[in-house]
Length: 135
Image (cartoon, rainbow, N blue to C red; front, side, top):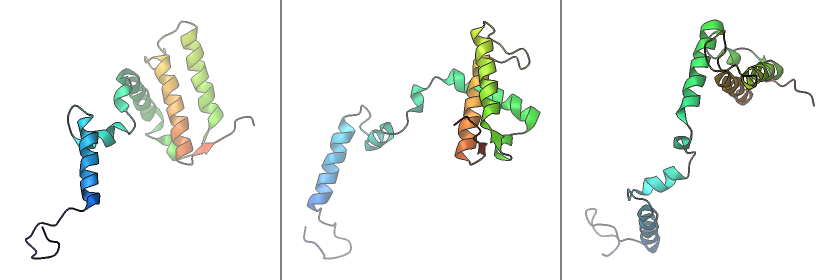
């Protein structure tokens, strides 16, 4: 095809276009579904590698906390890192000492540990963490 010409005429592929097509074909052929998007998706965080039970139980702990204190209450007010560190440690020690389920919530102590850590991460990310750790 000659470049230019009528608006209905297909555009001639450049060497760059052909290289990109070839590269995508190579990438796509490396995956069983043959889809070039798969290669890009596989390069991102693989949540499918994360067991769901911990996330589900942590969600139950967060719902329990939302009923007591309000949803995402740590985003409304500053929270101190030692409060959640201490809570996480208490739950972890209770679990380590043989108590699997928190008697107050009826949920696993380890899910409480996850929720405490999740709140610390979220508060830090959202500028709501009073970092009062020893330094």
